[in-house]
Image: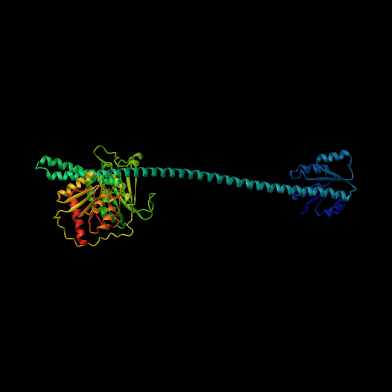
Length: 555
């Protein structure tokens, strides 16, 4: 327990000594003063807990001294005890209490009484200071806790703001993803529909082209009739080109991906692209010479570039610039598989498109061009090529700022662009000079009729069946033939499955697989000759000669 300071004020040294002797048991710090001036000096320099004052002093009596002490802010509540042998009447005591004394001790002093009173006030002083210290610590802790709570509240507000921002961001991302998914599903649905329509349309064109070609050979020498038939054949061939674009969008065209040097490919078709866009359009290229090779069908990529340049030309009615750029891109659109990709961009500074037009730009038959100026299949074909090649397409455009179409195509990681060794040319096979027994398998009666007519015109003996099961029944009945021409997409059993059955039973029997679109990437190792519908009589004859040549080579 720390001692406190007790001030003893009396003009008589003997009395001060007696106070000191009485109070020394308390083990407090006793400070003595023989006048009011000396007392004030101690009060100003030292923190005093209890004051003992003599009432009768020569310069200033005790009442005056206590009154002055109480005027000091620090000592307004300090316990002051009057010690006096006189002025002990009741009015004197009241006067003493009025100026600020808290107690009276009469002389002669009873030591135990004086010690008890001083001890009580000293302990009260200590407890008061301890309470003040505890209050100060409590206030400090409250202030600290309040500051911590304010900091936590600020952090919580910040976290809430960040959370709301992240929720808004994730909501936008989710909405964008759902929009992209909806567009992908819509395009996929349109693709399935388009592929089916193209397949059926190819079958119709097959019958039309085959019949027109045979009719043209049988027409009398009439220039007008020949011109009309030729015009019909050309229209059917334009329909064939149209179905090829539809198949490209539906990702059902036959692709032959290989390692392609894009810089060399672009330089090879640059003159063609310049003629397509005209002299008022400047072509700029930004293609590094050390660009990694692409894994893509080069012919289809050239056609895609031509479509993009034609679209750019139509957007640059008053002239402008088309820029082609290529680079390896680390960032890629969502949905692409892992691996390295090259971004090919075709940009123009034309009139651009609004957001609604951009969203529909890749849909088949959607076009903003005038009647007769476009089919609406250019971007559809490019979209299909990118998707079927394992890549992606992005279109960015704004009114008055031009359009950029970007293709992400995979890098040919395990391929080289070195030209393969040229094999010695095979000896040409002479046209088949004898009649062949040929089985035609197709579920479409028009296609069968057209194919049979072309074979008969070539001098062969065709037989026809409407399904793969009927073809197997044909061979099960002991009948033989020299060649089988089969459609692929048939109900029950596909042409490839039929070919596998025939290869197992008749290893040397040639099979030609014809299809309106490519449903299988490979022929499952059967090594068949393949034709794409619609095919001409010349293409049919060439395929037959190749199939028979392979048969002779195998023998």
